[in-house]
Length: 317
Image (tube, one colour):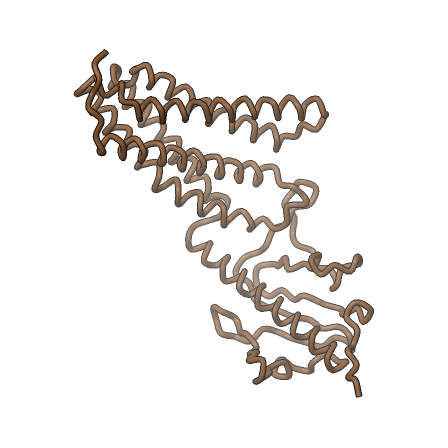
C-alpha cells in the first residue's frame, strides 16, 4: 500500500476540517432545536424573545464555519485526487473514524432516548421533532464520511460538488429561517432597546421597594430615589431619553410606565397570546413571577407592595 509523506499542512487541513465540521453541526442542531421550541412552545419556557440570543449566536457560527468546512473539504479532496496515497494518511483516518464514532454514538443515544420516552408514554411533538433533527443531522454526517473513508468523493467529483451545492442550499435555508423567528438585525436592535427598558423598570421597582422599607412610604417622585452616596441616578429611556412614567396609586401601590417598540408574546397552553399584567408580588410571594410582558407602545405595570414580604425596617435607638 502506497503512503504519502505526512506534512504539517496535512495536519492543519484535517484539523481545520474537523473543527469546522463540529462547529457547523453544533450550530445546525442549536438552530433547529430553537426552531422546534418556537413551533411547539412550552408554557413554562417564558418569553418568546428568549430565543433571540441563542439563535443569533448559532447563526453567526454557522455563517462562518460552514463556508470554511466547504473550503477545507475541497482542498483535501483535491489533494487526494492529485495524490491517491493521501487517502492513507494516519491523521485522516483517525479524525474521520473519530467523527464516525461520535455520530454513531449520538444516533444510538438518540434512539435509546426515543424508545425510553415511548415506553414511558411521554412522547410529544416537541420531543419527536428534536429526535428527528438529531437523526437527520448525524445520519447525514455518518453517511457522508463513511463514503469519504472509502474514497467515493475523490472518485466522483461531480457528485461531490452536487452534494456541496445541496448542503449549501440547506444551510442557507436554515439560516434564513432564523430571521422569521428573531426578525431582522433592525428588529433585534428594537428588541434590545425594549430589554433595556425592562431592566431599567426592574431597577426602579427595586429602588422604590427599598425606599418603602427604609422610610415606610412610597416616594412621591423619581427624584426622591436619587442618592449621592450610593450614586444611584434615575435612568431614562435609552432610545429617546424621555423619563419613564411613574404614578403613586395608593399608600402601598404604584405604577411604572414605558413606551416599547414591540409587543412581547408569551406562551399559554402552547399558543402565542398577548401578555397579561399581574400584581406584585405574586400570590405565592416569589418576585420571580413578576410580569414584564408588554404591548407595543406605552405599557404600564402596576405593583402593590406586600408589607409582610417587605416590612418597614425600624431604626434602632
